[in-house]
Image 1 (cartoon, rainbow, N blue to C red):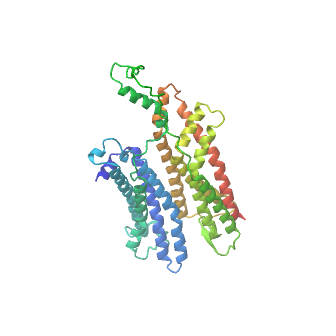
Image 2: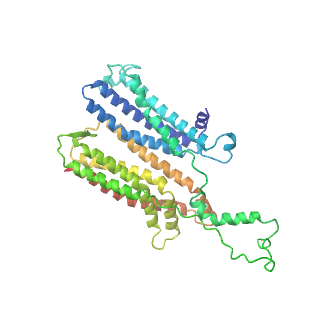
Image 3: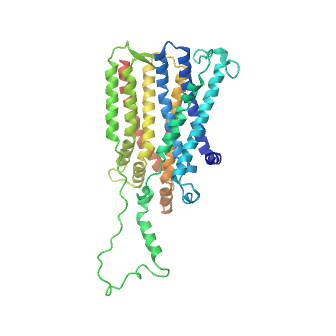
Length: 428
């Protein structure tokens, strides 16, 4: 009940994100039901049905990732001071986030089931003159337990992943962040002034030099250490190289035993799919490290205020926006490879292939946009502090444009190179 009240009173932007999660879940659920319908219509060809079900892994994965990102950026379930006193501690808020994610995804699965039944003609008459009767097995009864099992996969995985990501962590570690390091000495100075009695100066609380014993020089506290670089860059490069090597080796195999890739690319070597998956995983793992490296490069060779601010923010937000950037690069490289392979031919892109591509690309872009908004809110206090200190009002916008340009300059050629290498084995 609490999750429903928080969902009903949320900001319109938050409601829009949840509706987008519902739409993505609905598209993924419809693809899963279409795979079930193909298995019912072609009981003597289980390989094709298994392949169609395997193609649903990519939309399901991106949908779960998008749902978890939306849950993590939900301001209504964010821990705030005073909520623990009324029983809304970190554990309770984590449970509320998981329930809210489950509700959004379950609504999408329900809509997918209703649309699937409508196309089959189970609710009303057969639409579109029965054009989808063959692929949806309209003449056979739908096994409801199998359909509900497929539709419950995305809500279950999304809610469990949300609970694992938002689980309460230890509170013994000191807070870290760009604003925390920026205001470290100010906070220490404010605490010392608060401990000084009213009307007294800071030097009045010092004991007399003749009566006091020598205590040595006073030491100021050291500022918090800078956040270390993400440790996934070597692993990401290794997995990326292994994926490209597998694709190259699989491209030299006999074309007689292969899979049918989306878009009409028949008899493609089965190892190409595994190579593409490893390549995408390598880009996702290397994304935070590459983002952190971009921030380091922006601060190289006598940086000014603009480059220093842009580089520090990139380093601070490398883990938050690095993985969505890697996902977008993986999707873009796969799409570019498909477009390159289809040049000169006339691939048969069906409606289900188009729906899967829209779900994957849309979830990847929306996840990156959501992470960017979260990163902007995370260092909003730092931006406000800089403006109070007299910084120009255009400085935050210029720093944001510089960060976007630097990331595009690094990830753009990387995506193009990976796409060219991925398409080379199939084009040969």
